[in-house]
Image 1 (cartoon, rainbow, N blue to C red):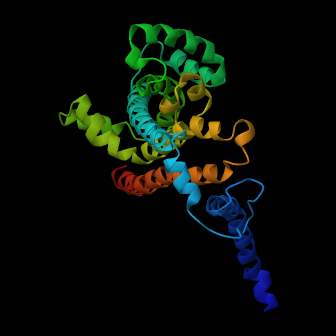
Image 2 (tube, one colour):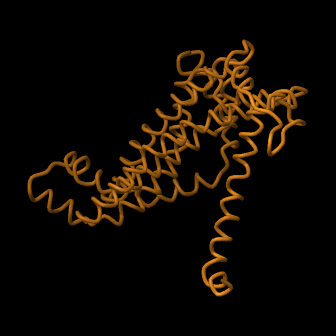
Image 3 (cartoon, helix red, strand yellow):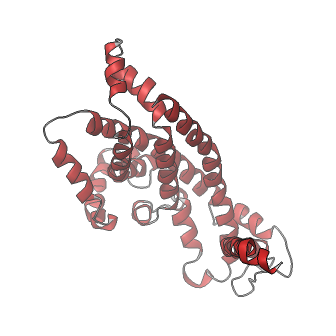
Length: 284
């Protein structure tokens, strides 16, 4: 027994401690969401009772717009992820496969721009979208399309750099052999290169979706009307001022519901990661 503990048993102990450390915040949030009192001071790791009152209040209270916030966040995150991945992949393909004037300067500019924090651009964004709101109200403040345009510009740089690094590992002989066989640039792009880079597309899409779902600073400046807010901005308002203690149960319930689309997107994308790795191993 002692010999087993020295050779293998300590690994099981470390694994159990790691799992307990990872599950602790989840159990605490679940306990707070099921706590019938719904306050911060009454929240414990093991609740004294359990009910779904916090979920019911969160979805039915007229002064909260949780369902609208949920739809806004889901639509903006999905649209922003797909659009930013496509635009970033097009830019990464050009930087990786083509040689043109300004290529090196463009790559350096993308890298340097990412070093500056987002809130440095808030003043410029506010002035630009003030004019946009007057000319094109559908793409101005308090609109999901305006926020979507804003997110597309912010995520383009880092995604392009990540994809370019992965594209550089795909042999260029594939492009050359396809060109000799008569394939066009569009056929090479969509039918040969795109399946081989499925892992980085899936990972980047996952990161873009999570980042957009959790983004708060830009959305808090951009969205002012209660019904136009996203989940991050709307739920932050639930804990502002003297209502922090009383709304904690509903806030915990909202965080649990907020995790559902993120887990769903991960489960959907993980098969593309595995399939992409398999296809890349065979065709590369």
